[in-house]
Length: 120
Image 1 (cartoon, helix red, strand yellow):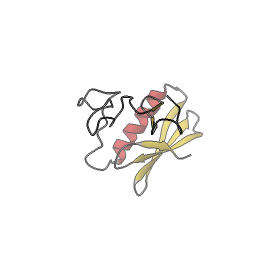
Image 2 (cartoon, helix red, strand yellow):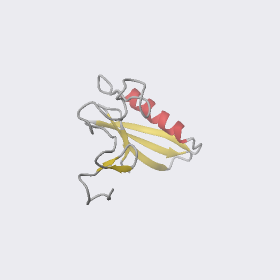
Image 3 (cartoon, one colour):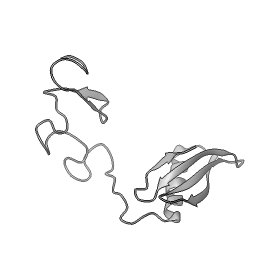
């Protein structure tokens, strides 16, 4: 088979497996809607990891604080701690500080989904 951009039909990049899927290869939607392999195709609990469920109501500041504190704990870096959390229009802005109080990063925690990203 030829690589992306040329050859025998359309190639699609699969972010789940990190490779290109071509004609005849199993992948989401290859045999029509609902066929192929992909996270959540067999129902809750099957797939590549825990199934994400967005919150039913917008996050409150205490929820955002818990998310950020869990994130800092997950880094397993004893020199980091959660700082102040400021409410913005559609997100909370959270500071990640070093133990001596220096700013290491700023995160945006989306009120609707709970997803976060660096904004520093």
